[in-house]
Amino acid sequence: MRVVTASEMKKLDEKTIKNIGIPSLVLMERAGISVVEALWRELGNLSNQSFLIICGKGNNGGDGLVIARELLNFTEAVKVLLFDSSEKLSDDNRKNLELFKNVGGEVMYIQNMNYDDIAQLIENYDVVVDAIFGTGLSKPVTSPYNEIIDLVNLYSKYTVSVDLPSGISADTGKILGAAVKADLTVTFEFPKVGHILFPGRKLTGKLKIAKIGIPRALQDILPSDRFLITPNTIKIPERLRESNKGTFGKVIIVGGSPNYIGAPLLSALGAIRAGAGLVYLFGPEKVVYNAVQFEPGIIACPFNDNYLTEKAFDYLLRFVDKKTVIVLGPGLGREKETEDFVKKVLQNLSVPMVIDADGLYHLSNFKDILGSKQNIVLTPHPGELARFENLSVEKVKYNYILAEEIAIKYHTILALKDVTTIITNGKNVYFNITGNTSLSKGGSGDILSGLIAGFISQGGSLLDSTIAASYILGRAAELYDFEGRNKITEILDLIPQAIREVVS
Ligand SMILES: NC(=O)C1=CN([C@@H]2O[C@H](COP(=O)(O)OP(=O)(O)OC[C@H]3O[C@@H](n4cnc5c(N)ncnc54)[C@H](O)[C@@H]3O)[C@@H](O)[C@H]2O)[C@H](O)CC1
Ligand SMILES: [K+]
Image (cartoon, rainbow, N blue to C red; front, side, top):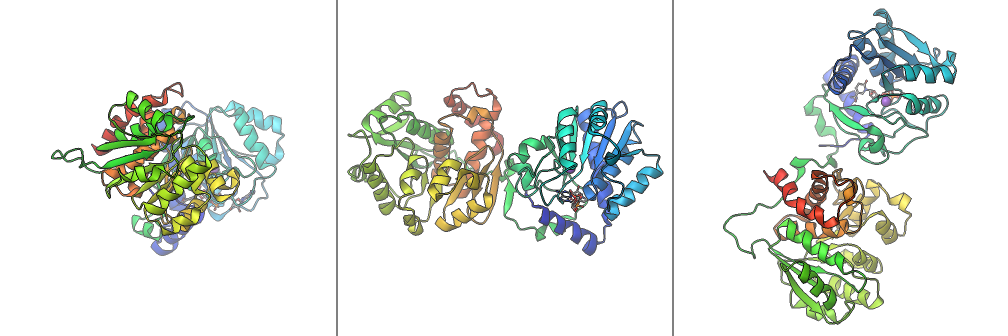
């Protein structure tokens, strides 16, 4: 499913109105009705509820006035709150204000009230409809908008936002001054970036996407480069019955050090749960023997030292063949001699690699090597990417445009792991929103790295495998929400069911 920006949505609107000839008032009417329908589905009988619709001066406010007029067909307990009687309203807003009044609708102006009265008013209604700003928000909100938004957040019993929570940037999900915290948001035709990235995603509440008649034929004008990952985005290699362990590829997890014994094991378990045919663990002997105790399905490649040093490379070579996929990094440690090992691996091996954790730490000291590589997946979290690029976490977090640039610069697949994970090959961007706090603990990234490699080893492309792994890991966590009180290994046990959901 495409994810759009404000300007892309505006362009779609304009083409629909100017090229196709569907009047803007028709689009507004359908938008407004779709919100009432969503409210009816969410709240059931609307006739016994009361509604306060807070309208801005633009078309978001116009939608609100359509909603108000339609709600009057269910109940008389409908009131519209406008900001300033002298405000210059958009044409469609003004028209719908007139229609609302024509059907006996009641309007109040914030300019004539004090904040206590407004707080009281908000508190007296069952539902507040936030139709202040939508995709037209262009700068941080100021008085009186921010005060009203704060009052809605303080006193509203149930808030539904039209198109976007007012105050949220459609293009970034950032709060511009102040923003409404909605229980439900009804948007039109496509999710906006602001619904997908935090804090916009949190303030959106439950998101409903309504069709309002934008012709499908026009959608080709949209750049096809931003997508919300849904089950039908997922491509997982088919598992033919006539097969043997060699059919499903070979993954070598390269990692481990005295303080990080579990990380490479978790990565190996991720590869096993993805369905890889052979999963090797190449690491310090203590780490490897520990892993095989836990999971005898892992093939042991113990290196007789506490850390993987340059000497380990020749030993690793014995296990690598052209079908191998390597996960480089889980628990590697940050010893200088390990960096020499990592450099040698990157200089001499051209097999697909998923580079995570301390693999990224070492790689950051010789990034130019990526210029000569073809099939690398980098899986940093914001802190690791900030360090990798010598930027602040603030600059990096949820910055999908920067992520695209980095993927192009190093021509890799980049998975910027977060509550919304951003996956990009530099051309397209995919947003993953599955998961919950059961993944907010050590080891989830290790599992992900193995899961990605496991899908690649079965024939998945680097991009498809990264998308599938991110979605599947999140879905596994959702299948039984431990609310964070889980062992990370319990998520592994739910991966087969999460895969079955998308392949069946
Ligand atoms: N196809 C669709 O998606 C349709 C969407 N509709 C609705 O139209 C709005 C967008 O309307 P627009 O008039 O462009 O802007 P807003 O109503 O979001 O904003 C109102 C107005 O406010 C001004 N403004 C911007 N920032 C600030 C600020 N910080 N302080 C004060 N004023 C500000 C600016 O001039 C804006 O124009 C979309 O969200 C949908 O709800 C159509 O109704 C139907 C089709
Ligand atoms: K809104």
